Amino acid sequence: MAATQRIQRIAAGITALVASVAVLAGCSNGDTGAKEGAHGAKKASPAPAPKSAVRMIGDGSTAFTGRQPHLPEPERLRPGQKPPQFVVFSWDGAGEDSQKLFSHFRKVAKRNNATMTYFLSGVYMLPEAKRKLYDPPQHLAGSSDIGFNDRKGIKDTVEQLRGAWLEGNEVGTHFNGHFCGVGRGVGEWSVADWKSEINQAKSFVKAWKTNTGMKKAQPLPFDYDKELIGARTPCLEGQKNFMRAARELGFRYDTSGVNNQVWPKKKEGLWDLSMQLVPVPGRKFETLTMDYNFMVNQSGTTSQGDPSKHEYWGDQMRDGLLQGFDRAYKGNRAPLIIGNHFESWNGGTYMRAIEETIESVCTKRDVRCVSFRQLADWLDAQDPQTVERLTKLPLGKAPKEGWASYLSAQPAPAPKGVPGAPAVKP
Image 1 (cartoon, rainbow, N blue to C red):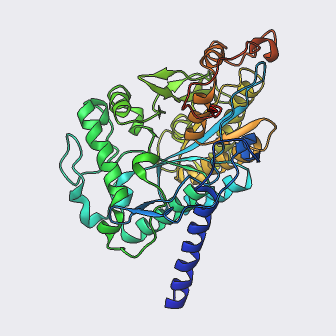
Image 2 (tube, one colour):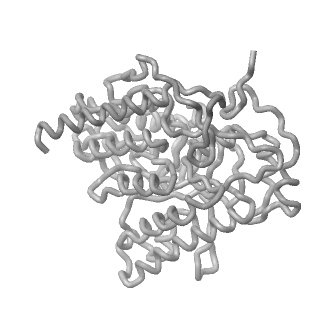
Image 3 (tube, helix red, strand yellow):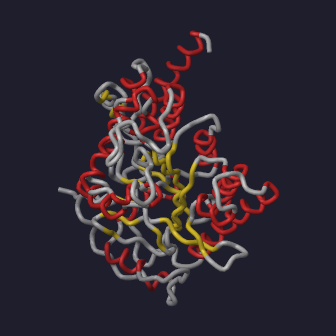
């Protein structure tokens, strides 16, 4: 790219960042002048951003830019109101590589009125030459089962993370080295080990400019210490001690478990937003809502299976997810939690399956395709008695007496300070 083009691109990016900040940074929590926003939630009226809206943090790898754009205000259910159908699409180890799947699914989400959660692997922000900066628990410094990144890969990943956040998506963490298995995996880590891993994941995001030498690049437009509120552990291992560490570090949710399609509860002080079991069409069992698990039950390996079955396997995953969606949508309305990887396993058939699922469900009536942050915000905004009633609904079953009767009790006022609570007038 010529020097002039680079300068134009940087200038355009800075203009877009400042414009986004100006619109949302000064938002009020009140309802005055509010309009219907994405997913049916009300957005507060924008106010001019203060002059100090953009504040660099540390070496300028990240920056405080005000309230996140396109983040809807959660609304408390009215007495007797049927809950919306939430669907969460999330990505483990999110990063942009030559496949460009991160940028592709950002476009898919925008076309279908969806936001998502991207679980960033911290080592994807650390160049190979600086690998010794990573000191993984119970492993040698510089170790990683998923490698590290190069300068271009970090630059491309930063570009996608920046754009995703400005579009209202969430940036979580998938930690760093992705160590799995008996005798060497995260399942044997202590609470102190997890705290070290979390702090290192943050540090690589907060110092990518220093570690790559790209000191003149644009920052990520968020404070990662405040942005990071949830995670999924590698291979779904080590959840117990991770949750204890996460609670102490201010996290709000975890999605490292396995559950049926029922309404979530809190566990260890965090919302347990576990992935779920859905049907496998043509088989007599259910599997986890993740591309990897469908793949294991089909070809049994990350190597490319029988090419003649690729299309069938993708259709099978898509139809299984849609059956799970219908079971909740027509039944208990429990949020559907789906996890994926930016991978081309079995010819990319699972990426097609996810894209077709997004296109099928996210534009339906009363459906909100949201990030984990948005789901946690909504749950926190509800009357606790309402959430308790929802958790009593069994798999795939709507209330026999109807939603209006089942949730008809007058809810208690939302606690002061809870997201979605009405403003208290003096």
